[in-house]
Image 1: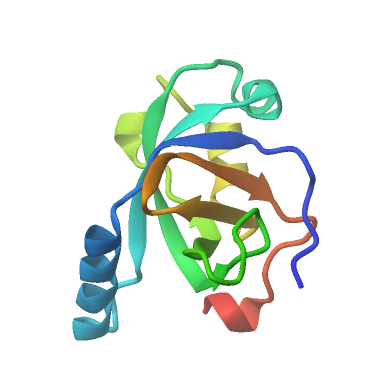
Image 2: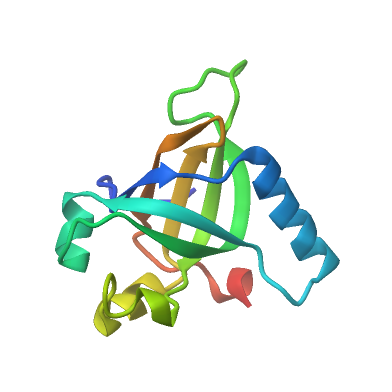
Length: 140
């Protein structure tokens, strides 16, 4: 069970569709040396603004260590489940220094983030930071 900070750091402004998510996952199976990477457009919340120092919307890649579904965030057992991804953010050069400074980049790059979203509703997911990094066995 993931123990996480209650406040979201980011909300999702544009999550990938189910077909895009599945295509990326299949691509990662075809090339096992490549990790599953999903791009999100995020909006910093109050906690995210404190971390980043700004409230600009930006697109950032997320490297997935574990994935699954959950109905724990508002959908009934019969409803469509939310996608839950555990992993880390990648901070490519084009995001620095405009959106992410080097100190923040190292924090975002730790395997300590959880993204929950529903592919039917591209706006409305959120990103939280786990209390502890994921075990190394899960991320190697």
